Image (tube, rainbow, N blue to C red; front, side):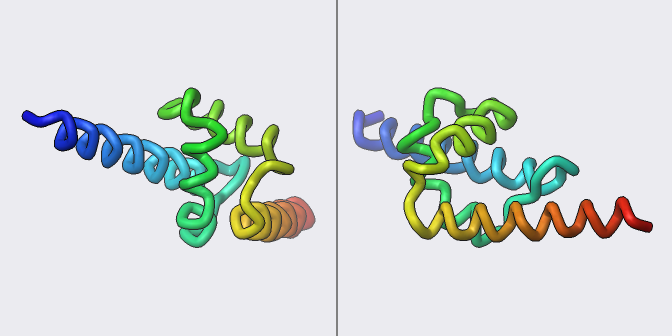
Length: 95
């Protein structure tokens, strides 16, 4: 195998790990990332939190810790998804 092929396979594996991590977060009750957030935030996850991959709780904590450093698109969709999740929890609690 060539070095570039190995590098490509490794990079693809990391992309899949981040996508799986963000996808798994959407199934938890604590916070659900939309597909749009997954798309907008994958680059930020690599840039800011690559050392935490594939530990889902650590990636989540890292992304919130570095919220001010997120790209504007990622920050916007994360804040929107967080507000929607809080509203959903509040509605469920009132029932």
